[in-house]
Image (cartoon, rainbow, N blue to C red):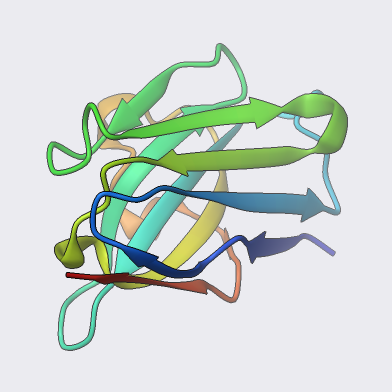
Length: 128
């Protein structure tokens, strides 16, 4: 059974940093071509793609709103994907989810329907 567990959320002041972790079980990054994505959902808004990393070649993708501030990375030995978030803004406040999908989605990475497995989410709150 595939499971994704996020951690690292919390309350931070604007301009601060947080690192989210997504640890997978039930599959290993080395054995399959998976895309691991980070998504977020703010109150009253639709879930949106934040970033994605492809296990096949390490390609990374970012939403324009976070480009230059967020960095996605993976540690295959730990089966964990990280999202380093710098220069946080109040508009980054949301529940952040990681998701895994079998395949290499390329520039279509942000489509939620492509992902088969989702974590439970972790709250990130940025105060002004």
